Image (cartoon, rainbow, N blue to C red):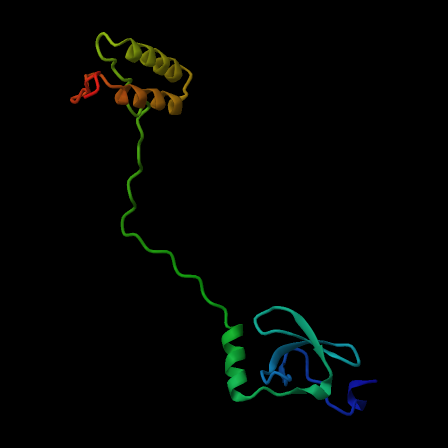
Length: 152
């Protein structure tokens, strides 16, 4: 049936309409299409498309129009912070930390130092750092408190 012969006027494409629901909250939508029987609407600001008969639709109230304006107004992105002077570039040294020095006379430290140098030659800096930490945490002095071997 042509639009002019239809008993209920069909809203123009792009206009916002409201439909009352049994829950009491009106359903708002922008008219996107008309297929002869149903009006296709999309939620304000985008979202799911829904259909309604032309007789079910009405013009939105002032409050509903205000809500539509809020839902369809784009939110501008915040402007990037303006820096008056850029930060200087960070320059990293080729070797962040010099190789560890083993404690004199400690066989464990000597072995760990060999492994660390091997890792540095292969550019495996993460594993070299692990060996350096192992050497640092390796005890080189006697504990301050020694427990007697006999029971009291």
